[in-house]
Length: 388
Image 1 (cartoon, rainbow, N blue to C red):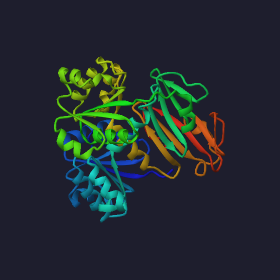
Image 2: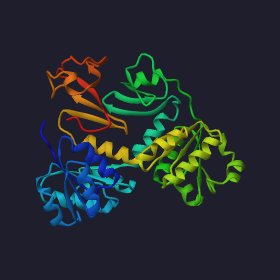
Image 3: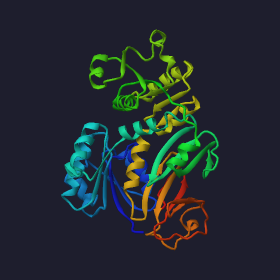
Image 4: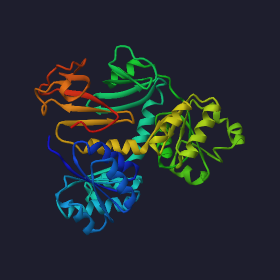
């Protein structure tokens, strides 16, 4: 497979994850203003580090932006990411990917794609919101994501009969069709949902759940402003950490709670309050993926914006053989094209092959099974890292 030339501008937590996963098999250059961060990344990863302001043409020239296959921008500033993407397109013909935090930019880009010089714009807000909404009614599932076509990845806290799965960290990772997963786990509808923390993610989750006919209560300090945006959602003005508010508004009656503050400390405290109040299904945004284990110890289901973003971008930076990627802290699952890898055995692709989609049916994995045209293979890598 061709080694791709990838430039990553901005190497905070999200940029570092992308560099880590891609540098295994591709030529990665990272750009950042912080020399100390670049020194640390150069020590840990096989990457070329360029110090400087990526919005300046001279910096991009030193990084050989004109010869890049992909330019990925993951700084903390949306405008910077868009500017760097547009500037890179004037130097060559790279595929540009910009991470944005605000939905407004994603909406503008979605009207015409490639708007503002960006080929792909990635925002964690809808990715996290969709992930929560998909599993909120399935008590046994903590994760449910489409890999490719009708192949889905699920994570359950208990066993799954008649489904292919592998065990990791006391949970089952399942690869199956959507209908197979939904029919294998009992649905228990969360009719009353509480949302704590009203960033963009909290608002979008509330809107999506209300549209599904659920009774949604959202605790917000500025109730009047939020009420204008969320028709059909009960807005409660107050402090989500107040014992009086929990008692007065009967917040503990909720079947599920979604916590979406801007800081992990607030999310962790609010999640603990919800669990202590007797709410069994608690979901929380976790901004630092390294904090996810702390939430899980409380019985909270964490969703990481940085992992969702890094996984989506990693899936986009690929050769023709890679059809899709689902990323988690412990592993990555790939969908691979039999058209591109015809004659290759599953064992040659990965030590842990998953089921193979052939003629519309999922068949159990066999390391000696050779791929044919039309096949879609699934393979697993533990600990992350691109395999192709």
